[in-house]
Image (cartoon, rainbow, N blue to C red; front, side, top):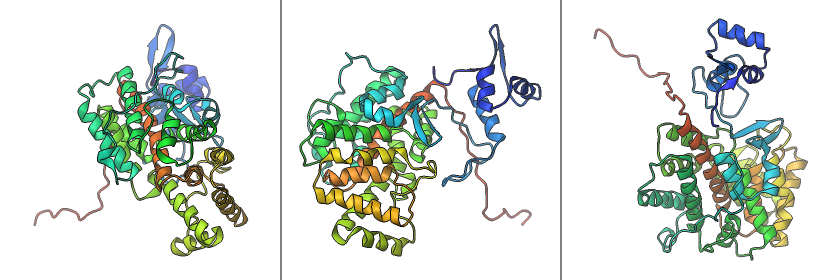
Length: 400
């Protein structure tokens, strides 16, 4: 059950206190509770707000959350001790053992799909022709808008209806990238759209892992935007369109465009060598290039490590694989932070000879599953969202 009430033991565990301390919070009016025949129960959002007020916000590149900001209660993803978990299961392990479609069902409903469940539908004919020349995220925006307008039942926010939208929309987004086969796993269709290399199971498995590992990552900027839209009962297509806004941005820390920067860096490295390519980036920007480091994973991003460990399965041109290894070697020799998921996604795209910005397409397609999973949580129990502005402009003239 999404956002279910917590027992006293669960609330105490989340707060890291003893039961007697929990009830002290209740008696002091710091934590509301409901009494039932089975004991006290607590709203998980109230517990989260109390936990937040009692500790400093973690040091992240997005800055500390201001006091009074809304707390989004989620059971979807957890980053803890250097690992990423989806509903309590290790995301890297899932990327090895489960299909993208399976993980989508796990995030959407908290259950694995039954074996007899139908595969996701392919888009109708003619959906690609109107999009030629557009960038991947632009194609996604146009496809999502068109699909939403055509769906007269788009305001049905029930879990089953949202899943139907998700399966059909993601299939259509894949189809917007090229001539996708009408059936088969999403990863195989996607490979056929993006790479000139023949689709094989090992190659499709790498893309499947890339999609799974991109599906959710706490409240990334695009996920926050999508979740806010859902809290105001926006339909699933509008939720995805809202998420696509930050995902398409030019500020890479808040978008899914960083893998495309990695692709460009790798292309430059193939022309002039990895050391010179990185040196030029440092000369122009004075910072470590995209693809290295992730504050949430001080010991190294497990998503990036997983994709790079499976790069041989792409079996692309040897010179491209060598460029990736050269780039990693230069980074290690200069003490760069470990590679992150952006480098993994960009390397997969580069070695598979995919068009530029395909890494961004992979990251964004994966995120659509996460955005809809967060929408389902908001539809079930909306967050009371109301941010306040802190005015710094001229003071009003009084008595003039």
